[in-house]
Length: 460
Image (cartoon, rainbow, N blue to C red):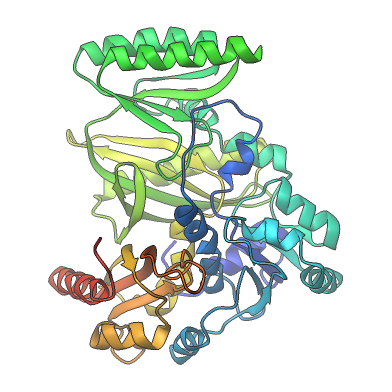
């Protein structure tokens, strides 16, 4: 699908509800994988308060995915000056519903379930036929539907969880005869020990091996080994844990690390009637396995694009047969030898690329090149939108110039700010879509924004 007309969101509504005019209540419960993994046994996951607070304010991404007739549930009110900036671009904003409580360490869904005033507002919308569209469907979002009467736009939680497992991804790729990295799926400790012995031979041959949680996300729940002894130590640790708990289950994937040229993310929508719509492919920007953004368009030849379209159709047909409908993003790579591994993992939920579609449709003219990326900040005090915009100056995107940085999430900048009176520096993130007419202009724009935002950073 070409994103040169506003068709993406109506297409999702049609696919999920049968009506392109349906009213959505969007909720950005990012890292929903943590809920899916709650009853699974995998690798340890570590994350600090700052990282959690920032991730939970990624809920503001939903603001620019929703249409003007929709509603978005947020943990806190957006900066009013930032909203004015979006309105100045001609963007029709949705209704904004706020949780009664805002716990930085809790997801927006958890906050919503503790919010009587918000729940009452959602019941009113349910009475008018609104649907809940979360980032991904877990038991928390199902509880929101149960308590408010909102119709879920996505399938039941067991279906959604099952198709989001990395074990499911590998087995489906094997079933469809798709090329993939050498690997093993493990659902018991015994299977893991056997797979690790096989993987040790790969390491001895000079290849690295990754061990991944079935529901890991954004670099969490993954360990990479180039030393077979370290892998053996992990096997011992997992075996001892199983012996202590009496639970032999595990949900892990082991894979040889491929000789990667490009990371890719392609996106398609599965309708309730089984229809598959290919949406787009973007080049994914990653760092140590952590998503950092996208390059648009991807530097792919037509043959690889055709392969991805065909793969999306085949995957979508199987997902539909397994009861899934909704948006799907698939991670893939090209190899240095010119090959394509079209299925690293299936993410049957909103992807970061999903939240860029409305801006692409509205602002990316033919020939425009873009990079969606994040800027990591180290701040000494909260910064408001007017101050940041002054720093960016002519680098900021305007409707007239149709080039520059269009910020698509401002809440994450100050999400980890400490309590008033605490002067310790803190981490922040600025997300935006950089748009330019040439690659050179895009590079210069990125450098300029980096320099501008670093002026607001404190290096410690």
